[in-house]
Length: 86
Image (cartoon, rainbow, N blue to C red; front, side):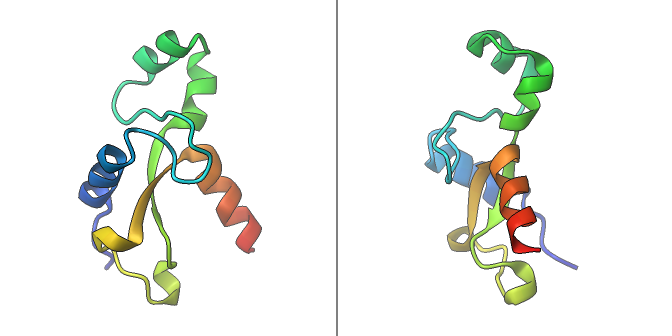
């Protein structure tokens, strides 16, 4: 069973100053309503900016949940990245 990404994701989020590793836009990790209000967007739009943990080297390719292999990515970039791999 894969190790949880919660802790490495939180560390990556802090290390990246709350910005997506791929697009550089701000993300939220715990309060979508506050994020939406701050950025003048709807709650639905804010969902795209939810922080997710992403393996640089895919777990299926032998990547681990180690801090050096995990980055914080917005939901939008994470989904786009996974669609591209199929």
